[in-house]
Every structure is written in C-alpha cells, then in structure tokens.
Image (cartoon, rainbow, N blue to C red; front, side, top):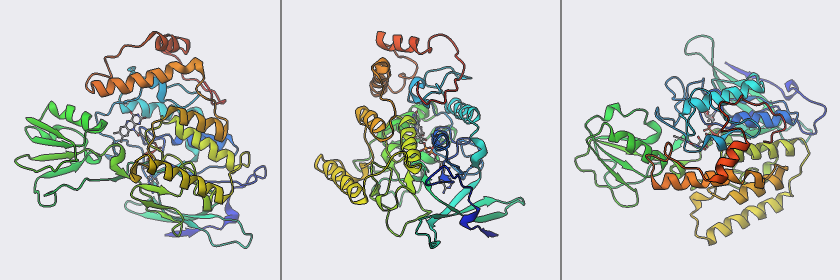
Length: 435
Ligand SMILES: Cc1cc2nc3c(=O)[nH]c(=O)nc-3n(C[C@H](O)[C@H](O)[C@H](O)COP(=O)(O)OP(=O)(O)OC[C@H]3O[C@@H](n4cnc5c(N)ncnc54)[C@H](O)[C@@H]3O)c2cc1C
C-alpha cells in the first residue's frame, strides 16, 4: 500500500525561516552506541519539528529485525566519563565499570531520550527506501520526498509511505556495509568465513582453528574471546596473502575503516557520491554544497570523540537550518572541500580514509567555530589526558586495559571535581548542553 502526502501536510512553525520537519535518524532505542538522540535533541532545541525514522525495532544484537554490528561481549573502549552527551553524564546504572558492556550504554541512551521526551518523535521499524528531491511546487523551494517501508498490522504486511519534508539529516551510521579484503583463494575456500559484522558469540568456534584477519579493536576483542574456546588462533593482518590451509573458520575483522559508507536510499542525481569510501563532496564532512543546508550528513567522520563530535555537527545543522548560522557560498564550500582533499592527498592519506581523523584540537575548533560549542576548557584538560591514557593502554594491552588502569593526579582531580568519585550520581538534566 502506498500513501502520498503533499507538502501542505507538513507541520509548520512560523517562527522558523526554514522548517525541517524531519531528520533521517538512527534509533536511540535500539542501537547501543548511537548518538541520534542528541541529534534529535539538538534540532528540537533549535525549535524544529523532527521525525526520526529507524529501520530497527529495539534489539541491539539484531536477534529480531535488523542486524547490527554489536556482538554479545562488546564492552566500550571509551571511558564512560568521556562518551556521554554534553550536559548528561553517563553515570553508572547497572554496570558501574568505566568501560561497561553495551547494554549499559543502551540504558543510558534510553534515559537520555526519556529525560528529553525524544521517543515521541521516533518511528521504529521504519526503513527509508528512497530519498529524492521533490518535484518543484512552483515556489522555487527545494523539498525532499522520503519513501519508507513499515511493518503493517498483519504479519508480513509491509506498508509503504511517501512524505514530503523540508530538510533531511542523514545519520545512518557507518556499520551497515561490511568491507572484505581480497585474499587469494578466498572464493574457493569451502570453510566458514564471516565478517565481524556477523559475529555474535564464540560458541560455534569450539575446537576450531580460527584466523582473525585484521587486528583493530574488534579483531583483538574477538581473538581474545575465541582464545577461550578455540584450540588455536593465528592473528594475521590482511596486508599479506592468507593461504587457508587446515583452518576451519575465519573471522574477518572489519571494524573502523573496514566498513564502507552506504546510502542505498539516496537519490541526488549524482550530487553526492561514495567513491572509494569517500563521501562527497561534503563541506566539513557535513553539508553537500549543492544541496545544503536542506540535506546534511551527521556521523560521517571517524576516529572522532563520539558522540560529542556528532552532537556538535547536529547543533551546527540545527542552527544553519534555523538561520542562526549561515554557510559560505556554494563555490567557497566546494573550494574548501577540494583544498581539504588536496592537503590530505599531499600528506599521503589514502582516499578511503578521507573522513578519518584523530585530532582533538580540530574537534574543539570545529565546535567553537561552527556552532559556538564550548571548547574543552582547561579545567577539563583531564578528559584529554584520560582519553590519551586509554588509547595508550589499549595499544599496550588490549586484554587488560579496561580493568587495569592507573589515573594520574590530574585525572583523579578532574574526576573528583565532576562528581565521578562521589559514588553513584543521579542523571542530570541540563538543557544548556554544557557540563
Ligand atoms: C562492535 C563495535 C564497538 C564499538 N565500540 C565503541 C566504543 O567503545 N566507543 C565509541 O565511541 N564508539 C564505538 N563504536 C562506534 C560507535 O558505535 C559509532 O561511532 C556510533 O554508533 C555512531 O552512531 P550513529 O548514530 O552515527 O550510527 P549508528 O549507531 O550506527 O546508528 C545508525 C542507525 O541508522 C539506522 N539505519 C540505517 N539505514 C537505515 C535506513 N535506510 N532507514 C532507517 N534507518 C536506518 C540503523 O538501523 C542504525 O540504528 C563501536 C562500533 C562497533 C561496531
């Protein structure tokens, strides 16, 4: 069944110059990691009407419905003191560890949504099938047609709808299209091969010889977990050729750069493309110049502090949409993208890592410059130190860094001053968005 709605059915708000009534969003209820809650929150704070469409229904392991990349044993690799939304610290609930299991983070995201009443805007089990420019209304204003599929009332029934929105924020994450390395013999090898995207629990690897290809965080985690059940593990990086001999299973780790960006629903007539895992052109990894500001992307950058960076992006988008901030002219944005790409190329950064950067200073500057987001003040310098010591700890000993760490005086003082060492603190509701 298909239902078409005209743009006059949109909820409108006379206070706003441009009124985005939707954001393509990921679902805070389901995903143990997602930052969508804060994106909806940022748009709401700016006075926009928001509709969030999320294809899944609520299970982070994807046992029912949509498959996610979360395996059962996932524990955060980022300290809880850093990973929360601004103004809403990730204080302990059920799992008090600094690096808790994914369920604790899901709980936190739910608390966040409840505290700010966000779930009313979220449509679960709603998959965006197509996103394209609406035929002109004769008023010269760009709008978007969003076609969605939703589970109907009868079992197996799928209802398709089309709606027109003023603006769309694409926030589908980075983990839906696994990227597999090309390894000689892979196509002929008859035993089990799976990407970490499909890995859930170690049980079925009992007594097997497993090769973990790729040694990033997930690869290390999975290898450590398989040590408990498998008879032998070889961990290989994918740069050499892996000749499969007598092994009976392969887990190909594909965390980080081992996923490809994927926007199969997006129809922009070639104005936004994905080429060698480079999404572009995107001004500051967020706005495609020719379609800005009514189309934007939140969550494309990798190796940034999450969800903080995405929250900053969302705030910027919200402010641009309400007219509080303006974007440079299209030509200037395109030039800036080209300059960025040239500089990365000159620095020898492969194209597929265009959106990867681990640069805290850049993140700070980005927030301040684009949307007035407060820099990490010197009183919060301890957070940077905590982050760095975590990165070092992880590099030195993946197995123990989450439970065996030693904070410096600076970090301890910072934790104390922010209420982290005073036992279980209540979740705070701070609409100011700052800590
Ligand atoms: C195993 C694992 C462990 C991780 N551990 C950490 C960690 O410890 N610390 C950290 O900072 N980061 C970690 N990350 C990264 C973190 O998960 C991401 O940075 C974060 O989830 C990004 O949030 P997001 O909202 O942009 O995307 P996601 O959380 O991926 O959410 C995107 C949502 O969009 C939905 N969607 C996709 N397509 C459609 C469609 N067509 N229609 C409707 N909905 C759609 C998806 O169902 C999904 O719910 C980890 C990632 C993985 C895979």
